Image (cartoon, rainbow, N blue to C red; front, side, top):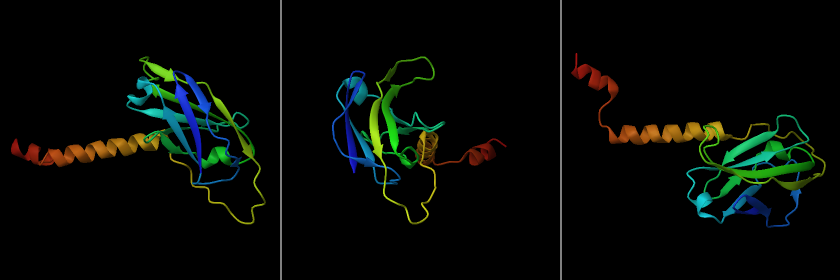
Length: 155
């Protein structure tokens, strides 16, 4: 299932009326239609999923072509989830674009008659590690000689 949003400037609007049910895992996606060039050209756009009724329940996920999996942790109980977007480099004082939060109601699920796995959703740090590993692999494929082999040449 996909919940759909549209962002223009700094305004985020939900565009569907799908019912979201609690305790859903690896099923609910969020899709964001990026209208402005600043959003479409941004190197990285992240979505934040926050549960204001729960302490430390905020997850930031890097979008892949405007889509991401909603972390199961924010769907763990009925209540309200806040969704917002960010792009740019918010940490070092450069241009940073953010949106308003959009509230999404999470409805109560039926009875659960078994254990639900608790493997954590991947966050922004796992995504960054994945990108660094990919860049390292790319560089290693371009350079036919290792650092150790270079060191041996100068001994």
